[in-house]
Length: 276
Length: 310
Image (tube, rainbow over all chains, first blue to last red; front, top):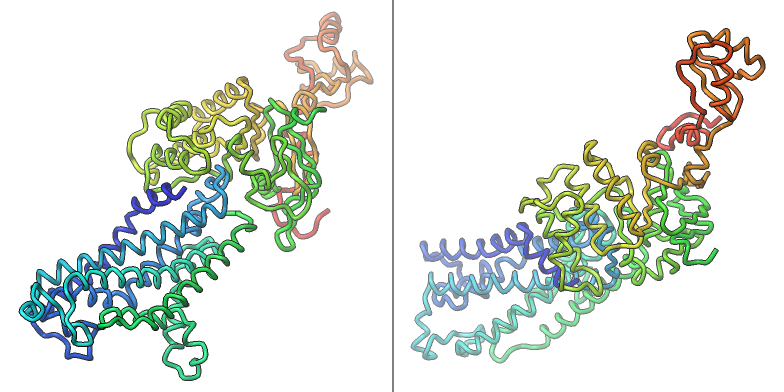
């Protein structure tokens, strides 16, 4: 079933469109920066944006920071919201269940396919970011500093390209986990309704709610548990040495959300009357 | 009756959606090997019943046994032996019909990769889509989708076919093709259960009929029994008055030059009329049509909303 799900996802035009758009935004930013050389001042604009002009190898991180707040959540919401509700509205859900495909098995397959989408999305952005960044800004003047294209970390110490690769991989994994929270929520909403749009909007409502509560002092007690609170913790991966506590806390919170959302999806779907 | 002779048994099957009772205490038994027609007006609960048989909808109360296993608990073991078309066909619109069937065949436990291509080609050929091209299903006509849906139901060579409105959207030629296919499958041992609101459909195809009305199964009977002679003969003659004179007391109805005469034997009646020199232009044993049976056993369709029931 998992293979069927992956095949179905990879052959959807919408999925490829999402990936293309995700990669297009950072590329556009890179082109603008490269032609104007007007980088935002340090501390303003997206994370890492001020640094990329001097070293293209940091552009993957900047690209991820660019798509993280809006673009990435939207695409994940659309794809995950479509998971069950899309099959229901197309009518294929009843035929899958009558094959029979076990309901838990179907949910797991859907979660796996959403995970694959998220991972590939983050990976594609990273790879495009790297290619575009290096092409537009080169390896940077720091090459003399660390030798062989070394990069200054946020803490000032120099990272070798190998270290940078490991940290970028860590970033991909962490962001995929964050997005998977939305994916699992989308899956849950997707079992509640037969409308993919409603499910996707539900996910975005959660994101917006969380973002609204985040700066409120009155919400301080629950801040740690909001899904978006730890989205930027991956930036600590680019410090030297890496600051693990916030990353660890963030990962735990995301895992909590994923298990709760998936459990809720299962609880609802296992005994649901399929009348679509 | 040994249990294996019955492919579907429901007892007191009831489904309520909120305050609406869609299916109400249905006791249905479908023997193996028949062509069973589930007949009823729109909204009479046919589709909900079929969904409960397949374990898609969970009964409020009552039990379902499908091929001797309780549903929905036995779904994993039973449903691979059942082919279904529920409330119209459905397919992933961005894929071709062939790809749809391949993916559907690959879905679910225990599906073998070996022979998949042949299985798919075989069912496509059976429903008359053997030469279908690579167009996505999105571009299919209603009739092609319907054929594809039936092909999907046949994929695993099922013992039992549950078809909801199988000829919807087909042209007369297509309807005939599907009928022939179903009769052929039935002759090879497949039990066919089809639900329809079209009397002609059921009358042309089924050997046994169940009539549903407002969620209840109001009648289950063999078609032959339902359509048995009524013990009356329809006589058509240019001289009705002479017939009434000859058969005084036996004539129970008259409509223009057509008379309804009590009597079991049209041949004997014909001989009497001819012997008396009365011209006869038509003479048949009266049979109730399925339409009459259904109208007698059901009320108004439940999508018809009248103020107050009589």
